[in-house]
Length: 357
Ligand code: HEM
Ligand SMILES: *[C@@H]1O[C@H](CO)[C@@H](O)[C@H](O)[C@H]1NC(C)=O
Ligand SMILES: *[C@@H]1O[C@H](CO)[C@@H](O)[C@H](O)[C@H]1NC(C)=O
Ligand SMILES: *[C@@H]1O[C@H](CO)[C@@H](O)[C@H](O)[C@H]1NC(C)=O
Image 1 (cartoon, rainbow, N blue to C red):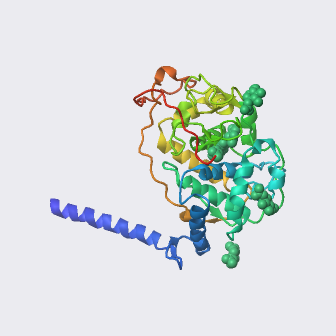
Image 2: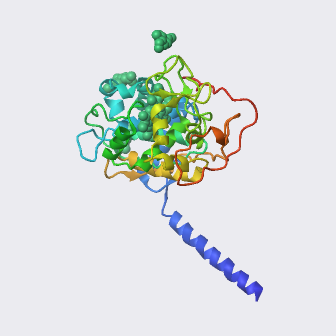
Image 3: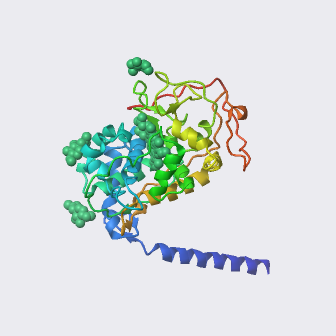
């Protein structure tokens, strides 16, 4: 009897496996051996390899990966749901670089564009497909990142975006949220997009300290930035206070005024706090918001997400940097309990700059 029931369970499990195999066999195999949902995606596998070799130092979560993600935001946010603010995720920032790099909010983007342009010229992709594929691949090099969607088939951009579409760290929360809303993003989605600052550093906020990270784990897509932005600040990492910068808790770390203001504002504080040590939530919300960002202004694309490499996982949990604990947290959300977090042993660290910045 018990044996009979077991074999029923096995039979059910086998038929479920057969069903999911049937779903999988709808995929096609490219001449190069990889499988994908659509034959049009096949050439992208070699493009991804080309990017890894020629842009990302063989697949690293370094300066080029971080800046590829930033570039995708500055490109795509040139868009309004009401029209008149650019073609969105169209690659205009690369193709019309002489115009868009003049915009104040694009400080530091000139380095990225100069680094990416020859790689772009080495591939048969439109500027939009290039910028957003590079962002998905670069992000995938960072342990803990979600595997981002990649939609393919953007036409060449027709014009540069106008100025003043990219938020500045000196902007108020009201101004920042209004800009995100104008591009179609809720306050919760804006916070989700700021997960990107977990793999981010500043070159031009304080030009005396290029490559100064926003958290102590700049090579990992963890929720550390959401924790560290809440810690009581005590110092400026470089040549004193700069516009867009507020007090940081750690030597070698920079805190953006905008990140801090968003972490404290009643409209966003709980979204911010809820990300802390919640890797699954951060990954899924960031992935969903990036999926929207990547197709702004770009209808009728083909889903080629299976060309994007699968990121390494982040084991977690996150920890307070050494010498910090709950007493140092500037809690701004009282609707949910602050998560319980251990502290790294030892003296307070000095965060190292990102190499190559
Ligand atoms: C409130 C909106 C935002 C503001 C005010 C802002 C501001 C900044 C600033 C000032 C920097 C440093 C630039 C430098 O000095 O080199 C930076 C870096 C960065 N930002 Fe943002 N950002 C915002 C949203 C985003 C979003 C939505 C993304 C991506 C989805 C993003 C991705 C990045 C990345 C990856 C870097 C680091 C680039 C690198 O290390 O090379 N940011 N951001
Ligand atoms: C900007 O784009 C032009 C083509 O429009 C290209 O020749 C140039 O190298 C690009 N500039 C940078 C800094 O990459
Ligand atoms: C370049 O890409 C287009 C569009 O994806 C494709 O139709 C064309 O065959 C490609 N050309 C080469 C030389 O690979
Ligand atoms: C440091 O800041 C001061 C005043 O804010 C400025 O005059 C000086 O030029 C800066 N030094 C460097 C090396 O940028």
